[in-house]
Length: 114
Length: 117
Image 1 (cartoon, rainbow over the protein chains, first blue to last red):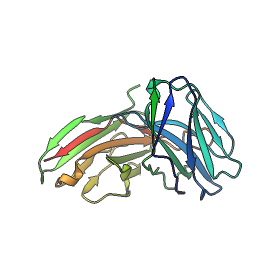
Image 2 (cartoon, each protein chain N blue to C red):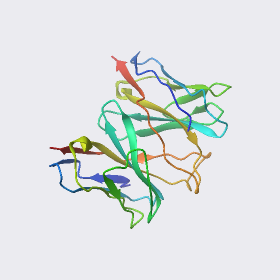
Image 3 (cartoon, helix red, strand yellow):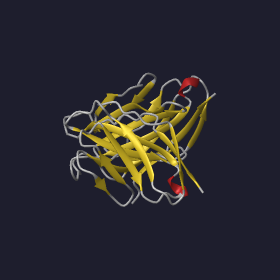
Image 4 (tube, each protein chain N blue to C red):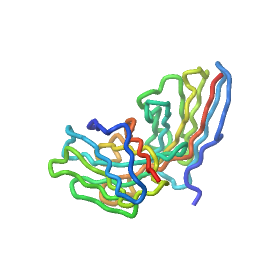
């Protein structure tokens, strides 16, 4: 799986959009970009994933650059409950024969400021 | 919707003792995982299982044993606990048969905080 690079920490004002970057310059064509977050002392929570196209769900938007070497997770209207560590992970799609494990790095600690 | 549950939530044990952490999921997910989380290291995979009676090592398997006799349970055993195994342990599950656009999600339990004295 390709390696990812994220800033160790970021702050964002409450109500503003939080933009979390992730660099994955060695990503290969069959690898997806996943985002998870971990709120203090809880298990990680899936947010969103994508391959090439930008994706949006009820939690966030994922913008993947055309060359797929980087992506940005956008929380459109950050609240205090969005304070968490956000993990960007790159890996191939699941398959019954393949290796299913996700590898988590140290992520970005996002703090929402009141 | 019971989901995935871990027990105990907190555990204190002594060096050299055997301790088992339990993980149970109600979704019949085929894949289950054990991670440990230490300050500054993110989550590291200990073991995973693709199905009942199929297990494989992750990144940091030494000192741990797993079994998967039933799909819904995936216990993690520390055969002889050491202080370096003091950590927060997370269990997770996923089912690649249930996919939308070719991506599967991991569902995590609430974790077990283990202290080895």
